[in-house]
Image (cartoon, rainbow, N blue to C red; front, side, top):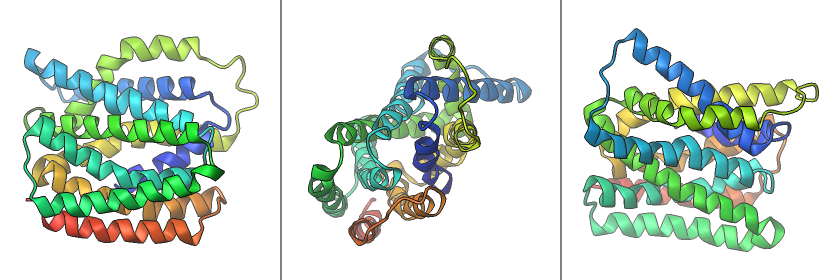
Length: 273
């Protein structure tokens, strides 16, 4: 969760100098090469045929969908504002935990999760007049596909392993992502600043690979719906990073919504099983 907290601020910095399509494809390509190296070094077994659909879903959700949609969104909205949408991610993950992993949280869980999501949605609608509705739409779509990728990957990691799951998903996306990165290659890197390069490295190595090593293992061991609620702590750290590293404004409304959502996640996590 701490690693993922830096993803949106890092993406915001990177899209200042890199096009969203290039950023999405190159981060997946870099992470896939690293994942392939790990699989070869540790001589991991290949996934069986029945795992392939799940791996394609993971690749669609967290390797391609979420990175591309958030990169597009961050061309229109600030990182601080986008982080508030993360409050919807635990609910999205929990819904797919029921649909794809067969989990059955208690009714009170949905009450708290729904209330937290309502706070986030209300904030987005209130501030939507001052921000890009297109950016809002990209973020909502990103949350949906990410929840699917989290739940599917956590289910698969119970048998395949956490870092193995994300590594194989990255490798499956490599035949598409590598040519796409070449196609979207900038004409020159002369105008790319150090901050953008740092953001690219962060989202490629940490957000795209290392973060999932811990995240999928935690979801598999503690329950997807229950552990997924910890994502509600992510806005705290994300807002702090956006304010300190990017100098973006964080108003009291953002802080208030974040506090309210975190209180909801405490109740949701209590009734997750």
